[in-house]
Image (cartoon, rainbow, N blue to C red):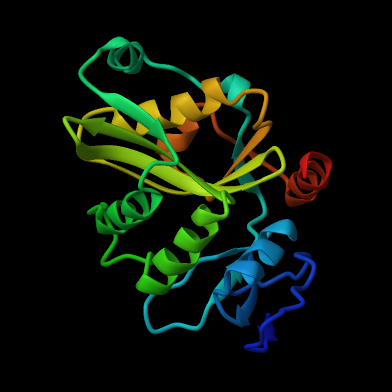
Length: 216
């Protein structure tokens, strides 16, 4: 694992390092300056760490991705999307969506990795339209959503949340179907049964890095 200096412009390593203790962990240190986050994603790295830890930069192998045209749409989700009960908004109050993702209670997880520094940096990137969000609202109340960073035609999914059945699934389906020409690959970062159920699949890291260069 490589230790990064805490400086304005970080030179991120190529994600080819093998870490037998923590597979996929490429580097530690640096900072969450928005421009450094962009540099990291262009190399196929993303930050993920717990409170009290240094910034940890990951590039898993294999990497879970979702090709938008392969998304699975359940009947309940189709019904929800046709309903007039909810409003679906793009890039609306993205800072609120990010914070709500951090507040989501998740099984087998204590606390959240979405710190105030994460919220600040990604909200700044949202202001530059580098971070997108899809959100679900009911009578002015935020009910579900997701956010992620977009480079070229790649969307790096960061997190999602929901307060209602199928809310985050509906947001993901909208991302896949309404932006099919703008997004060719969704990086899911790490495998979950939820994403696999929706059509995501694992691919080799070298193939992911090839697609990253192709689409950005």
